[in-house]
Image (cartoon, rainbow, N blue to C red; front, top):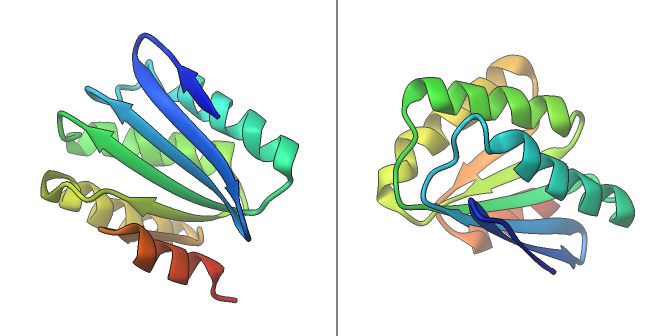
Length: 126
């Protein structure tokens, strides 16, 4: 299902063993995140899954403060979920690395990946 918004394009799919969400946006700013995560959370609750592959495509890389805010809201909205963050854009590698580091420090089950195949393999491991 695709949920268009003036600020982002969200594609969601229920896949075997996990839920897939891909967002395309110019940037993901703090004002955008609550609505985006609410849309994803609604879809996840309907499907009753505990694993999320979250892929993002953004024209602008997030700075460190924006990354912290994104991670805070991600962990608050999806507690207890196994989450794989994916971006193929090399500009987002610092975001992915910081996200994985923050997730490990807070005990959240979160991984960061540069391709869907690696993310899916990790996500479906027990």
